[in-house]
Structure formats: C-alpha cells, structure tokens
Amino acid sequence: MFGAIAGDIIGSVYEHHPIKTKEFPLFQSHCHFTDDTVLTVAIAKAILDDQNYRQAVGELGRRYPRAGYGKSFKKWLHSSDPQPYNSWGNGAAMRVSPIGFAFDTVDAVLREAKRTAEISHNHPEGIKGAQAVALAVYLARTKRDRALIRQEVVDRFGYNLNRTVDEIRPFYHFDVSCQGTVPEAIIAFLDSNSYEDAVRNAISLGGDSDTLACITGGIAEAYYGPASPDVLEKVKEYLTPELWQIMMQFYRSRGMEMSNNTLAYSQPYGTDKHIDKNATALKQVTIFASGTCIDNPGPGGYGVVLKYGVHKKELSGGFRQTTDSRVKIMAAIIGLEALKEKCSVTIHSDSQWLVDGILKGQANESKERDDHADLWNHLLELCDQHIVRFVGVNKQLSEDKRAHNLSILAAQGIDSPPSPSSGKAKTIKIEVVGTTYVWTGEYWYDEKTYAEPPQIFIGVLNKRLTVELAKEDANIFDVYTLLERASKARVAGQHHRAEKLARRCLKLEPDSEPALAVLCAALRAQGRPQKALNETRSHSYSDHIPLLTSRAAALCDLKKWEEAKKTIGRALAIGDSQDAFNVMQRIKANRPDLY
Image (cartoon, rainbow, N blue to C red; front, side, top):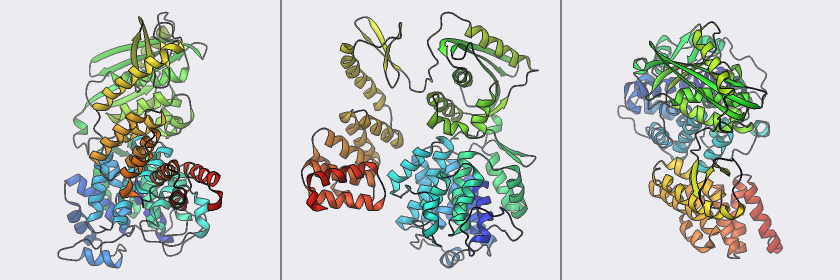
C-alpha cells in the first residue's frame, strides 16, 4: 500500500543515521525504496494473482537483489527450496499491510497474515508481529476507532501500548525484532493526528526507521485515507514502473483510481469480500441526500433521491425532535439501506460536515466524541457493503433540489417519531400488560408515549430481553463478534450470557486469551472463583494483562494472597492497567505485610 511504501522511502535515509526529532524533510534526493517496499508489493501481487506467498515473494524479491535484505533472508531468497528459518525479525511485520486491506473478517486477516509470515519468519514472535500489524490495518480501515485498535492488539497479542511516542523516544534504539518494533510502530500511529504526523512519529523514535515508518504508514493510510497528491507524486518518482503498476492494479481492484496525482478512494471506509475484481461491473447508483432541521434542535427530516440509469426513487421521513447533524447522517443511511445488492455508489450530501467527516477521517473521531456515534457507526457499516464515494451537492442538479425540498416537507410533518435511530442497534420491542416498550441498547421507553416504563416492569423487561439477546447470540458464529458481545455482556452484568459466549469463542479458537479473560471474570462474578482458576490454569503464565488480572482477582476471592501478588505483579510488569492496579490495592489492603 502506498502509505506503507511512502513510509519506507521517507525513512530509508535514517535507517543507519537515526534521528530523535520530528523536524526533517519528508523526501530527500538520496531517499530510495528498500526491501520493505519490494516485499509489500510482492504480498499485494500474490493477492491479486491468487499466487502463493512464497512464490510471489521469491520471484519479485529476486528481481530486486540490492533492495537491502537481511543476511538470513537473502540466503532464503536465493535458495532453490527456501524454508522458514524461525526468524522473529520485523520483516514479517513490514510486508503484511496488504492483508489488512484485502480481507474482510478478523479471522481471515489473522489467517492470511500468519501465512505470509510462515514462509520465512515462523517464530511465534514473527507470526504475532505480522498478525498484529494486519489486524491494526484492518481495524483502522473498517472501524476507525483508536481505542478499539489499542484494546484489540493488547488483548490478542499482549503488547504494551500504554506508552506515548514522547515516553519511548529518549530510550529507544535500533531494534530489528518484531517485539521491539511492532508495538512502537503502532503507538506512532495511535499518537498521530494525520498520515504525515504518524510517519514523523515513527522516524523520530530513532530506530529501524524505514521499517517503523513502513508499518506505521500502512496503518495510518487505512485510518486517514490516501496520502496527499504531493506524497503520491514523490512515491511514483522513486518506484520502478513495475512496482508502481502492480500497486495501481491492486488499488483498481478495490475500485480506486488515480487522477491528477490524487488517489480517489471510491470506498474509503469499506471492506470488500476479498479483492473485488469485478468492481466496474457493479450497478452505478447516485444518491442525493439532504437533511433539514427547524429551530435546530427541533423538528427535522431527511429527503433522498436514488438514481439508477433512467430510474428514480424518492424517500423521506421526519422526526419531532432532532438535530441538523443527525438528519443529515440519516439521509445517507436511508439511501444506502434502500439498495438491495452491492453497488458502486456516489452520495451527494448537502452537508460538507458529513462529507469531510468521511473523506478526512473526522467520522472516526466522532465515533468517540460526539452524540452521533450510533449513526456514524451504522453509516460506516453500510459503506462496507458497497463501493461508496461522498461528494458535496451540485445546486444546479434537479435531484439535489428535490432531495432538499423533500427534507423540508418531512420536517414540517406532524406524525413523526421522536428522533432518528441508527438502525444499527436493532431495537428490541417487548410488550408488558398491553404496552410495548422499546430497548434502544441503553434504555427502555414506551413506544407510544416515549416515557420510561414503571420501575416495577424493569425486572420483567430485562428478563425477557435476555431471552431475545440469546436468540441473536445463537445466530452469530464469527469469533470477533462473539468476543465483543461476551465482553459487553460481562460489563452489563449478564454473567451467565457472557460465560456462554466466551465458551463459544473458545470452541472456535481454543487458546483465545481474551475469551479466557472474559470467562474467568464471568465465573468469578457468579461466585465460582476456583472454577475460574481451573478453567484458565493452562494460561497461568500468560502475558495477557486482562487474563492475569482476572486470575489474580479470583485468587484474592479465595484469599490466596501470596499467589495473587505474584500474578498481579506479572501483569503490572507487562504494562499499566487500572484494573490490575485495583487488584494490587486490594491485596495491599488485606495483606500489607506482603508489600
């Protein structure tokens, strides 16, 4: 990916001359692409051509013999029968970013990342490094949630990401291991505010600069979108025509094109079902979306016009009390929800705020900070199902004018619900004593009056809610989704449900330490600390902080204070955790003599 390749080129001059500052020119006359670029392109080519990774890496690598390979990899590259050599080097992680862009589930990303690493770097640390980077790219592309990226990488791989670039920089040095490169590269992204800032963070650490910036750059591109035209123009200057063409084919296979040195992501926040080689064969649909709010906040409505060839469809709806921002997002959602199959879509929105939110990555931050997270999440999920491009309105187009008029009429309507719902949470309705109550995912309300239910009904509603949620759980088979629901169930106090979901995760992925952590916590909450320990005994020397913390808490429940101290000490040695700190305080309060 160009984000990774640009990072490699920018960092190439600092690999053997490290710097500890973010103030440096991005491109210099003696910049060049290295083995990081060649092997990243090789992985992309393997995906494009359905070629095995060993063959693709070997063939392209041998065509660029002076790219700067390490001694062991160079020997592997020129062997007649190259075999993995148990390497834990960061070469496994620097070439893997195309996997995070090309595959559409966590399981597929982790599987393919492992396969790319195993051809040479089959040491557990090498595989872990490749999987962590690919997962970070995938989550940056599909979820755009820094907190989620941090938590998932920590939970699955045990890396310490609770540091900042400024804390790392003074003591960091050149390190070619995955375990000494991948966490720092991910932190360089997590601490950034743009693609360029992420790359500068990585290089300023003063380590294996080209590889750090390559890894960071791949994640940053997935999160912030394509690099600027100036950066892309420079990348083209440094690459050979062959490498450039392979990468352009990769982008085109995902519905992206280059125009005036601008790489247009027609689906900036989508996940394709692997690489879509038939993107141009999709139906070309245009959606004109408008939202209007009277006395913001106040009555509001959306208007949508869908156009496919000579066919048009109009949609509108209103709400008694809402905001301008919510109805504008809702307009785009309604248009996408009306599509019955995967399409290539251009959305004309009358909200520059919404367009910028998508194209400039502001929607990612909005998911964390504002009142519209439910709608942003749902909109981005719908974008994942199509190839979508967002543009501002053209006031000369009759369809734009019609969508705007529809939104005004809808806002002036009388029989409107209270406020737009994202649809993503799939509200659950339950009837009690002739009254229907709606569960939003956070609270109950009367469907007709929008009032809260009487307190006496809450217990009944919650019991029936558990039954409904169990039905939903039964239809989920993806490990990532099961684990997410298990974690939320535990936090919500649904401990039996959390236990069931965690056990299902473990059937699909027997050594999943995040699932074991949830299981241990759920069993503890049910008053079964000994069973919690028995079920997780095989991982008592884990490096997974949440699992160690939960085991230490179970040991505290059984008043095994000395063993609890050792376990929580291990967790705190790996990284900071408020939960782990709380367990340590519990031990100190009961056995101050141990400290």
